[in-house]
Image (tube, rainbow, N blue to C red; front, side, top):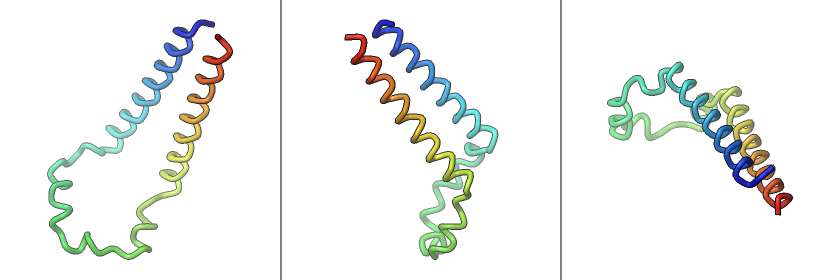
Length: 88
């Protein structure tokens, strides 16, 4: 396997992961209301939040997804480095 084939595969996997995250964001309506984000900093009640409110906002699925994304990225990066060294 040549160096170019490895990085083309890496680019395809990265593009697929980005596309999956973008489709998820569109389906969960993350881009629904852009004006709301501008006004969040102006509201005083949003500035003072207890630790319980912050912990309740993050769901188990979001935490799992973040860890899974980190592990997948780490594995792909390490595999690209290992294959790169073996091709020398």
